[in-house]
Image (cartoon, rainbow, N blue to C red):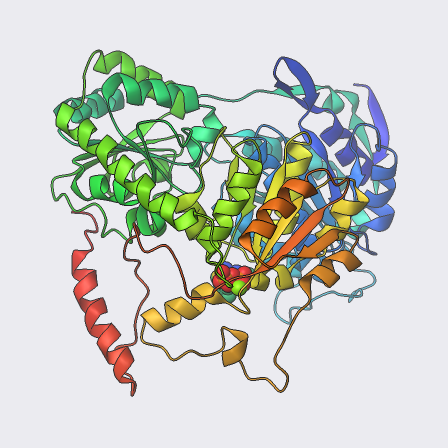
Amino acid sequence: MTTIRLTMAQALTRYLASQKTVIDGRTVPIFAGVWAIFGHGNVAGIGEALYQHQDDLPTFRAHNEQAMGHAAIAFTKASFRRRMMAVTSSIGPGATNMVTACALAHVNRLPVLFLPGDVFANRRPDPVLQQVEDFGDGTVSANDVFRPVSRYFDRITRPEQILAALPRAMAVLTDPADCGPVTLSLCQDVQAEAYNYPEAFFDEKIWTQRRPRASDDELAAATAALRAAKKPLIVAGGGVLYSGATATLADFAEAHGIPVAETQAGKSSLPADHPLNMGSIGVTGTSAANELAEEADVILAVGTRLQDFTTGSWALFQNARKTIVGLNTQVFDATKHRALPLVADADAGLRELALRLEALKAPEDWTKRATEGRTRWFLAADAATAPTNAALPSDGQVIGAVQRAIGTGGTVVCAAGGLPGELHKLWQAGAPGSYHLEYGYSTMGYEIAGGLGVKMAKPDQEVVVMVGDGSYLMMNSEIATSVMLGLRLTIVVLDNAGYGCINRLQMATGGANFNNLFRDVRHEVMPSVDFAAHAASLGAIATKVASIAELEAGIAAGLKNDRTTVLVIDTDPLITTEEGGHWWDVAVPEVSPRSQVNAARKEYEKAIQAQRVLD
Ligand SMILES: Cc1ncc(C[n+]2csc(CCOP(=O)(O)OP(=O)(O)O)c2C)c(N)n1
Ligand SMILES: [Mg+2]
């Protein structure tokens, strides 16, 4: 056996650089690069190794480890999980800064390789700078917090362990069902330790998309359910996009006359103007989709986790005799809520179902109702996004301006606040993936770093980040990275002077206006943040606009800029789109001295009666 003597870190980077995939017939590295912030826990080991691989495994530096995780997540999501990135940090705070990003990737089933440094395996210098000491367990380090949020976790305490750990990591990162973040916690001393690695370990390896096929029994049961359906509805989740099943979904819906509703992760599975696309479903759903969902007797749930925003906390699907068919690569999802499982790749599963359904058509009046509901919804949506002279426009009106300025060609990026709900309802998505929402973990601070990752995946496309003032203040440092890397973003900051959506939620649950909007926060000086000046200080071209018309013109003009462009607009914290939507289960206090809370509790007790969990 030919071997080569390398440090563990050198072997790891060499291995990562030799992992490939095929995109549009071209063999490309599966890792587009590594985000890195160095410290004593990785600079000498991983840092030295990355330096030698700058051509085939480029290193990028940002300003915050969590943000680097966000960028890596957005990159792989925008690449439909076909390519990915790694993220490395030092030990201690650098490592634990990545935990939120790791959880985000876990919830959203997105492949990212986290490589935090870890304390010395040999324990000679213990406690090393930034080491968390456990009085009762010598094997514990701060990095153990990655365990519950990693799909696969391993601590590398000997250099030869990566011979087993890296192939396992790749298997998880590339599997459509198990896909999620992998954490390899790299002990600082072991990164620098040499070993005679077999040359064969570094052979080029090409990973292709696995497409599991459904079993005959499950197909037969799903076919029978759909054949008996009088009111079928398809719920399209993120799995449709990751499978590349959008054209197959359109064919399937058209062939059988079945309307399609989209989750946050599944939006853009069908173009907004497709006659069978009912738009968003659930808490932030359109009236068109939700009216159908209430009555649907067979729900074909494709590639969705059925989270509470989709199911209206299980109070949306009111048909007591409904059957859910769970078409999913992951059996955990496929069997949720007594669904008939159809464990398969979305594209393969839809094709096989279509073969068995032959010429089956949903009852004509159901399909007709769907298209009529869709027409009614669009009238409401057009009213919510129409131009206005209002001094403080709504989020919906800002969405209208952004949409008019960039059309359906670009990609919109968002994650938290009031915007995701409004975008889910109102954004008119074009191509698959042109709507990029992180609404699995809904992480404030994802937006700007996420936009950066999307732009890396789609350098030729316009990427528009929409972000609230709260999210912006939580994490904005990667504006500077976008300028540094020449990755031009358009960032629209909606400043409603605080946490608007949580303030509204507080009011809806009987709470007093407290601790959300700046005006209701304990203060000596009322905050007045100059977002444009702040963004400009990070290197962006930034403007505060005074109206919707100025915003629309500013975005269009900014597309010619050579740098990241930030537009700031003041918005109304109280207005949202009334039409559509659905109740969401947020527990209201059972006892309170506030009469408003007592009233809200009464309403809440009524509302939970509508929950149909497992019926
Ligand atoms: C990291 C994180 N912390 C807290 C929350 C809870 N949360 C959701 S939205 C929100 C307020 C967001 O404020 P802003 O970005 O200004 O948007 P707005 O609600 O005003 O539209 C908060 C605190 C969260 N989603 N993520
Ligand atoms: Mg706000």
